[in-house]
Amino acid sequence: MTDNFIKLPQFRGFYMKNVVPKIIVIISAIVLWFLIVSGQKYVGVIDVPLKIYEPRDNKTLAEDLPETVKLRVEGNGRNLYFQRWSKKSQLILDVGAISGSQSISLKEYFSERENQVRLMDDMQFLEIVYPDSIRIEIDEKINKTVPIEVHSDISLKPGFILVDKHKEYALEISGPEKLLRDIHKLATKDYQRDNVDIAFSEELEIINPFPKLMQLSQDVLEVEFEVEMIGERSIMNIPITVKNQPDDLEIQFLPKTVSLRITGGNSQIQSLTEDDFTVYFDYLTQWFPNRNYYPVKVKTPETVLDVIDSSPKQVEVIVLKKQIPELRVN
Image (cartoon, rainbow, N blue to C red; front, side, top):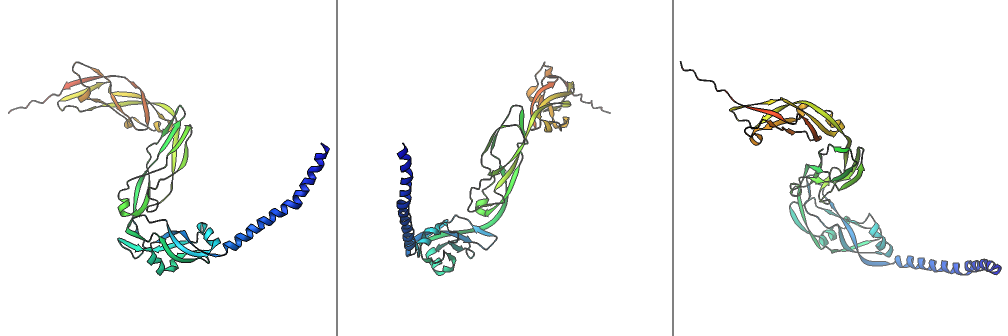
């Protein structure tokens, strides 16, 4: 056991003196080889981003163009390898003189305008490889305001309600006229949250169906989710009205008013009055001969969750024939 403790430091010293220097030599040789090889000149094909220059404010592309173009270049190995991460490399295509549709030979265009070929230092442009040509379509650029649908799935704790669910949102979009005339609304990405018992806000990403051609005035929408406890309230003395009343009949009610017990979000139902409710008797669908008592129908505001009671539950409906004045003949 004692011999093992003595031999371990000896082995470690042997490793440090003999193995580590060899590893350093091998790594140095690899680095030196890479520097020599990568410094030599090569010809290769690379992908370069295609950037569109449109100087006119009222014009824009109407069709997608390729994001990148393959071109043949000459340069040292290091630049050929690292150019894929370079933000300097790009091809600039000026479409300011184009109206309507036009096909352009990229080979001819960039061979005549090498100043619009931006590459890393010490890299030389040779030729366009693919695509050889592209078709460009220019359209009028317009602005338009469209509504946004909020796609959300909010699960509430018992006793809570999501109020103001129908709040409207909108934003401005810009792009080619032929594209925007068929866009009537946008939507947010789906959002889900469970067991909510408090009001909160969330930034939801807006889906851009044509990100290359259409610009949004904002990329995210801040949505307020108004969550409240469910409360109860009584609305007293709502007058009863008649729908579809014949001209020759007079309809009376006993009593003339109804009181309702409603539920909803606390803050919203507190501001309601009897004028926000419609209590009515529909003569066309409800009236039966020799029947006197009827339940009334109720139309409530959207903020009301439910009508849990009405008082009275039925009212007496009295139908009378209108008196027609007699004509006097002199």
